[in-house]
Length: 119
Image 1 (cartoon, rainbow, N blue to C red):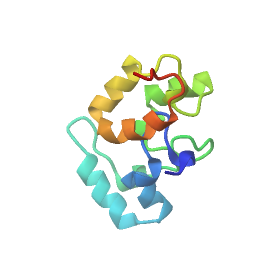
Image 2 (image 1 turned 90 degrees about the vertical axis):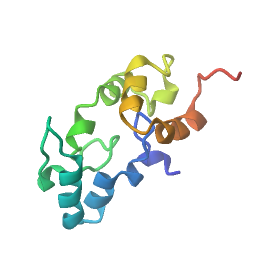
Image 3 (image 1 turned 180 degrees about the vertical axis):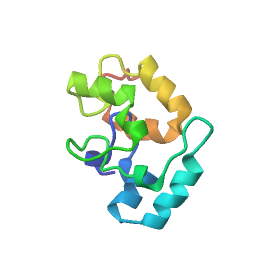
Image 4 (image 1 turned 45 degrees about the vertical axis):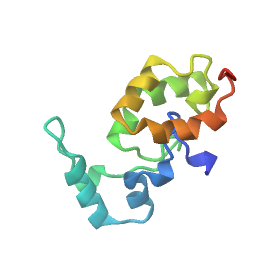
């Protein structure tokens, strides 16, 4: 696991299809992802499928990640991941994990957790 590519929420950016397509300049993959991830609330264009990684300070982020309240909270607290937070796991993180595959996220956060109880 490349800790530099672990997002604040625990997602491994290097396994995210948007991140991979951006890094490998895969325009056809961006078109497929845009179609696959579009729904009745938002229709993505291939040009929106671009991301340099959640913790990358200067690069463009996929809209979902750019607007992520977990990312915003962690950045304000100046922590590398939610695992460093005294409130871990919080309602924001749990809500996000419910909307994503939380098993993947938790696998990446648990080894990093500094405040987790050792039951």
